[in-house]
Image (cartoon, rainbow, N blue to C red; front, side):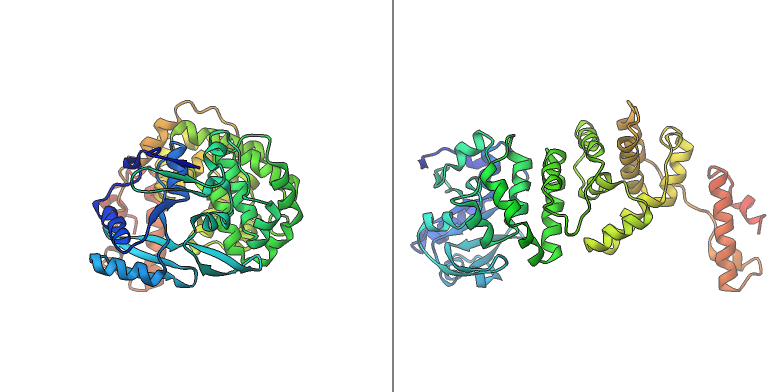
Length: 404
């Protein structure tokens, strides 16, 4: 389906250099179009998307066209025909049209084509196979616009065929269903996901985890995760959650606060783990060191309602663990315990604006009092700092030095 001047391209194009890229390709005898998220999300009235483009030029031809225009390119995924074009100090990915000639559920062997409909046919979902040129002309090969308007998320062609090309599409289906779909879920697609769920085992845990993280920050995550749990889609590495109600409360709370969704917070809400469980989840999903530290500390450190309401208690928490930790932990505490906190937005703003107290004693101060052993200096500093915190940060430098 061709829709002339259908899309307001000012919502996508915000750089004159993008126009240079389009001109470079066209001067070289080719065509270039936006595809995927940029088109889909703009049609859905969303913002904050990444820009992906497709061209009927081969990778070599695209590089030559950019060189002629003075645009810098970098190789990103030559095997799959993706070239990075540097615009405004950002790398824009442009992929040559292609067809999959061999797939095994994890990797694909591709060959390049100049047929836009063939390129569209190898994509996963109808809503992701919509293209737009610089003039707002839209090229919709599988009724993706209609599906988007009717909140239908479905695979292109036979769901089994699309899934067997890349098993990660199971997770992508649920992610896009949670973001754009409405019940009832497409039965043929769901049955294919259930039938081939074991294919997820053949993928690296990092690929599955990253899709799960993206799913966790979608609007209807609790409903979608229930479908996933009920059909044991991820049972091989995640236990079933008994806290979908907490996840739903957390999602609503964050939306009411106008806070950005956080995948780690939502995963925590799904399990409300103790320390050992948090460590196991972090290991199973191969968290980064920072992610593991944050996740486990949420389980280790309890925060009561008093800590939420008392400015002095909050200041101690902020000093010990940092502003972001306290913000996350407070939000989680309210959601987990279903606390009525009508002024939570004000409390969170106060945390963000808190001026951190500065401990007035340094190691050289202890050294000047005749203590030279490094271990002993550290012990004295720790004791003095604890006294200072317990005093609500009121003990001054002289009073602390008098304790040495």
